[in-house]
Each structure stands twice: as C-alpha cells, then as structure tokens.
Amino acid sequence: MPWHISSGKTGFNGKEEKMGPLAPNLIISENTNFLLAFFIGIAFGWVLESSGFSSSRKLAGVFYGYDTVVLKVFFTGAVTAMIGLLFMSLFGWIDLSLVYVNPTFLTSAIVGGVIMGAGFIMGGFCPGTSVCGAAIGKIDAMVFVVGIFLGIYGFAFSYPWWEKMYMAKYLGEPKVSTKLGISDGLFGLLLILVAIGMFIVAEWAEKKFPREEY
Amino acid sequence: MDNNTKKEKGRKYLNPYLGGVLLGLVLLAANFVSGRGLGASGAFKSVVVTSINAVDKNAVNDMPFMAEYTESHGTSPMKSWLVFEMLGVLVGGFLSGAVAGRLKLKVEHSPKITSRRRLIFALLGGIFFGFGSQLGRGCTSGSALSGMAVLSLGGFITMMAIFGTAYALAYFFRKNWI
Amino acid sequence: MKPLKLLALIIIPLGIIIAAVPADRVKHFRLTPDELLQEAGAGMQFISPDVVADMLVQKDPSLRLIDVRTPEEFDAYSMPNAINIPLSNLLADEYTDILNQHTYVNVFYSNGSVYANQAWMITRQLGYDNNFVLEGGLNYWFGNILSPEAPSVTSPDEEFAKYDFRKSAAAALGGGGVVSTEAEAPAIKAVKPPVTARAKKKPAGGC
Image (tube, rainbow over all chains, first blue to last red; front, side):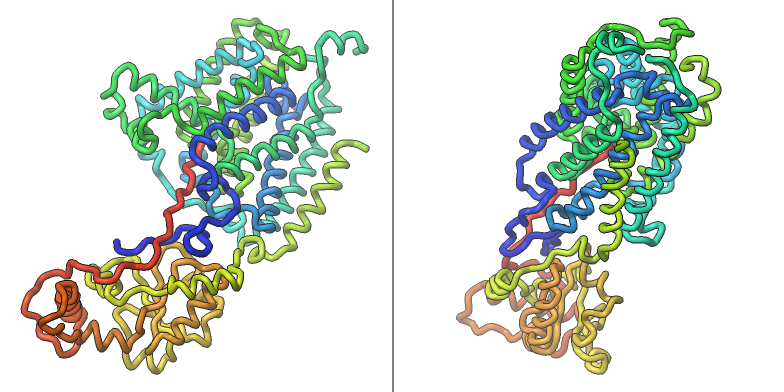
C-alpha cells in the first residue's frame, strides 16, 4: 500500500502530540511502560490489601450482606476512573481513541462470567485478590492461585471444544453509552446515581446482617 | 469489641469509599500511562504459556489458544505488561499487610467449617475462575473493573454475569461463609 | 459527615458536569493556526496524482476520492468511484463520519486545486486526519495522467518510466487519446509522498 493511514492524532510534521496515553503515543518507551506497570501494580496491591481484599470472608460478604466492601470499593473505583478519563479527555490530556476498550464476544462473556461467578462464591477470591491474599500469607489464597493455573491449563488443553463458543457473536468494541444512544458523560452520571443507590442499600444490609469480627 | 481487641488485630482496614477512590486513581494512572486498564488473569496465562514452552517448545504450536498468544507476544511471553503489574501487586499487597500487621500464615475460614473444607473449595473456586477468565477474556480486575471504566459493553456484561451468578449460587454455599 | 454522604456530595456534581458537557468537546483536538500554516507551507496535504493512479489501478480499497465541486460538475465527469461532497456543504453532519476517520485515505479534488485545498484546510483545522488534496486537480489529471505526453528523447530514464506508468494507468482507467501497446502493470511511483505518519500502536489489553 503506497500510503500510510494515520491512526491517531499526530500534529504537524508527524510530531507526536503531548497527550496521554503515554505508551501508545510513544512518549515513553516500552520498557518504561513495563517499569511503571510494576509500580502501578504495587499501588494496586496496596490499595486492595488495605481495603481488605486479602480476606476471602470479606470478599464473600457482599453476597450475604454482612460485608459489602466489594461493592463499595469496586463501583467507587470504576466510577472514579471513568469520570477521571472523561475529564482528562475534556482537558485534552488523553486521547481516548487510543485507550483499550474490551472487545465484546457476547456468548463467551456471559458463559465465562457465569463460571467465574461460581468460582467466586466457592473460593471467595478472584485472581487479583488471591495474589494479595497470598502475599500476606493466606494459605487458602495460595491454593486458589494453584487452582487458577489448573483452570487455565484445562482451558488451553480443551480449547478445541470451546473455540466456537469463544469466538461467537463478536460485536466489536461497543461502549455501553453508544448502545444506549446516550453520551458517555450522561451514562457516567447515571452510573454514579445507580452506584450511590446501591451503597445506600449496602449500608442498610450491613446493619441488618451483622457478623462478629472476622 | 473493645479497644484492646482492635489493637491486637493490627491496623484497621481503609474506609471502603476511600479505598475505592484510590483504586480508581490507580486505574486512571494505568490507563494514562499505558492506554490499558488493570488486569490479573492475563498474567497467569503468561506463566502457563511460558511453562508449556519450557517443557516442550513444540507443544505450544499444537494448542491454538496458546499459539495465538505467543504470536502476539513474540520473544518472551513473560515480558508482558500484566506480568510486571502482578509482580507489583504481590509486593504491594505484602507491604500493605506488613505495615498493618496482617502478615500471618493461616487458612482463613468460617469457624463453622474445617480448614480442609475451605481449602478444597478454594481449589475448586480457583479452577473455575481460571477457566472462566480465559473464556470470558478477563477477570473482575481486567474485564469488569477496567472494562466498566472505559464503558465497554463486554466489561459490563461480564461483570453482571459474575456477580449475578455468585448471588444466585450464594444460598447453596452459605454454609461455607455464614 | 458520613463517608457516603461526602462521596455523594463530591461525585454527583462531577457527574453532572461531565454529563452536561457536549460529547464533541470531550473528544476533539484542533490544530493551532501556526501548526496549520506549517503543514500547508510544507505541502503536506498533497498526494501525487501518480500515487492515486496507482491506487486506482491496484484497486486499493483504502482510497476514497471526494469531489468537492458542485453536483452538476460532478455529474458531468467524476473520477472512478468518487463521491460528491460540495465544498459549500462540507460541514454537514452527514459527512462527519466520512471526513473524520482512520480507515480510508480521503483525497479531495476539484478542477484546479483551490477548492480541494480549502476543503483540506477546513477539515485539517478540525483535527481530522487522513484527508489529502489531489495535486494539480482534475486539470493536471487529464493533461498528464490520462493523456500523458511522451517525453523527449533526451529525457532521463525516470521520465520514461513515469510515462510508461501513466500510459498503462490511463488505459486501465479509460483515459483519452492513448493507445497502449503493452499490458504491463505499472511498477513505478514517480513522486514520493511528503511525509508518512508513524503508525501508533493501539495497546493490546485484556486481562
């Protein structure tokens, strides 16, 4: 092909624009990106552990009402990041078209989610939190990690059976706001209101289903 | 619960809303720096691919799922963003636990069940989660949390499936927790 | 104050602000007048007619020719597979997705290059990428591509190569006044494009 198609904002003379995301805009090198990944991971692990996500009993609590930390942290986190991204884009600090949006494969998203849900209620962990739990010495977390590896091996070796399901119903990378026909910002506001509503219910539930210190 | 008990148990956990805001900022930083969100299960996959490679270099070619992974990751499957991030999570979790006095080797379980039962379910849970995360192209961190932050439809769907299923099955596993 | 109240007090107003701001402002990026002048001065908007001819002959699917003249002129003659976006209508909503995208190479053309240049100026100022101007416009296209002049005997080899290429291209494109003796596919691009944008890698994500 005799012509290169620009996939983003290049500014004049091909000079990169000084905006995020840093790595895709080639403002930082790949190795710097990996180094920062390490530090971001440290922050991630610290926050998770400090919030109590290293305890399987706290994590499972949201499903029985006695401890809704998962709900609060999870949704506050998602909403904060979402608003943060939209504001950064508003100020021209980040180019949202270069930010990865998870692809939607309808069938496998649902089936995979169901299986993970079962894993969650059985094991009381998810991959990220299990590493946190293992880091502070929780043996059940370590066993969970072993289980994860076994599960992945199992999937890889039996992949041919699932391949069709895995690839089914590819919808591209749609955003929820687009599908609903509203703007990103409006969806953000709606999500915030829904989250606050859930938090109110959660606090009520904690009062109603108390458990002793665990 | 009196003050003495609290002191024995070490520092209390962060207020969950504060924790959530901090988590959101970490996620924001990840997106700003690397253009992608946080994740976890992908790092596990890298380890699995590397181990299979180490045992038998050609085995990977026979497994289409692994093969397309090595294709996109070239030289070393371990040199991936998520692997570095998860190493950080390990360190960060350890540090936080150390500072708060929560480092202790133990099996955490409800007083109503045995350790053995807890560990069996932990293993089963891990297997299910590992399998499901590959099928669902992500776990709660990568698909649900990061996906929601960028308004991805797939992320939302996966999140609802995970939480919905867990709620639906909660009754059957209640003996393990309450 | 209860933490939840504090959180709600902060985050709901932020949500209202972000919801109120029109989506366009949240995404767009515009060039400053300086940058625009630099690009125009460097001639970065031009795409050589030889390159376009080659793309047409190779049936390159990424090429999209946009005729910015009036519909009447468009109906009288238009380039192969061209679409018509009259300059006066350039900013209509229906064309935004055509002009602001990262899949096709849009090439504006008009009789000379004045209108095509204007179209480029406007879209470039809006921050759109991948829009170019056919150098020389239709006038040059007719005179030099579709009916190429044979170079004089003393011309350098390059000129002959260019002429051969244009002859075959013209024949392939149904040009006027040329009898093609060979059915060779054109192999040479005579003019190099001014600058190519570095391909930015969108991150591979997932969990």
